[in-house]
Image 1 (cartoon, each protein chain N blue to C red):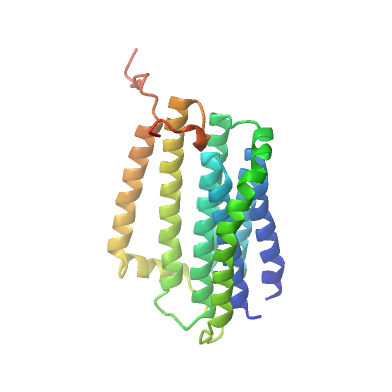
Image 2 (cartoon, helix red, strand yellow; image 1 turned 180 degrees about the vertical axis):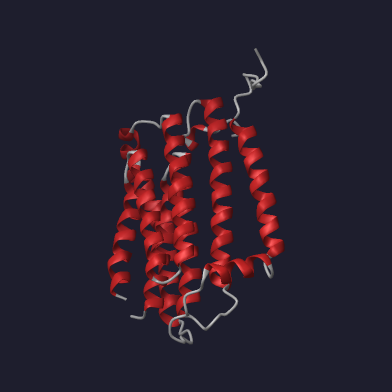
Length: 103
Length: 169
């Protein structure tokens, strides 16, 4: 097993774990935890292909990861702010209880 | 290769804990552990700067933010979470196992033209590339982060209370 395939396998397992958390958790903050895991899995792919893939003097892989980390931080901040706002209205972060738009 | 073989199972175990733990604070702390181990992985395979950024932004900011939100929102009791786990387990597995199978199949089929390891880059190289080739992207991310800061402050502000200015008596 080459290092590249090892890292790709690690990232696909991490992505699947994150997806599982997003699908099965009910607490909105823990769904955000799953999303962070999925974003991290994508970052591992970028770094793995930069390191063990074809030569790349432009540093595209690390560059993508830098921007992706910045955007993930922004997403977490806005997501948690929205969750706090929802919590202030409903006193709960359980997504099953947020059904006021339900017909 | 050997550090990778040691680190990968540790990252997976921490992530599994973050996904499976019923108590939300434990899940958030295990997420912080998984992200920190991920930063170590970047350091080990030669992306030093990315590893440090990952440590500062993810472990220092995002994980701490998640723990603080858990403290503020006082999530529900874990007995309820455990009681409904059997119901959500099957749909979760039905959706995720095919995704994993497709990913693993495609990884095992793809042969990439590997040219050995890419040379490690210096921060100077990265900075030059950021402020010449990628300057528009850097400015865009700056605008995005400013908008996010203002937006998050607006969302999180309690509308019932007027913000006090320092000049108020």
